Length: 249
Ligand code: GDP
View 1 (cartoon, rainbow, N blue to C red):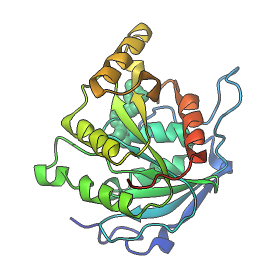
View 2 (cartoon, protein in one colour):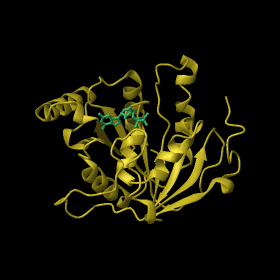
View 3 (cartoon, helix red, strand yellow):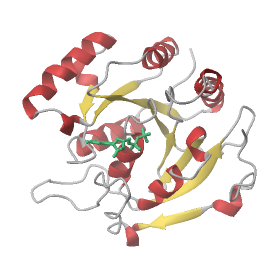
């Protein structure tokens, strides 16, 4: 299926819009209600990633398709469908504008690019492994991911999401092996930790780290409902942005 006929399809300029800081506090009515609110709890300290602006640059829909020309650092987010990626990104960048794009039909299978604060580009990779889609469609993300990695010159790293309650899927392993082979720096965000009892979180994160063969320190427990992990993730992304660009081996 193509995205023909969707608003702005094929003409990136038509669909550019920006979401400036003025409506940042107006997002608590989001359908998923997973805490996209911009308010900071008392005593939360300095925000490691204050969001001043967000601009949707457009989407990469197929191999050979358009992608933004940008000299700015890129940080990409990956994970299986339903892992909580939209909710995590809503929390991270505190913008209903993000939610609007991520829910547009057709966009869910594209790689979407967002300019954050005019400083770096957040790359939202398509969710993979959705159980209800046909097998051949389930693998659609692979060529697109390859296309993205072949053409990016500014990638700093990938934030890989894992649902705290689920065992990593074959696609999760496949993605992590692929990234390891290419030596792409990877951070892990373990989502939906509010679904466990607080004392269960650390042992479960350790278990996941062992299963995946990664350092526990690479894993950030996250909840879009409580906001747990938002600042740790924001700080880690900020650090990643300052690193030199990834170059293919
Ligand atoms: P995506 O497909 O990866 O973008 O996932 P979504 O962000 O749309 O979330 C999938 C489902 O998980 C939705 O029903 C969300 O409300 C729920 N969800 C996402 N993040 C969290 C979280 O941190 N805690 C809880 N309890 N539910 C979450």
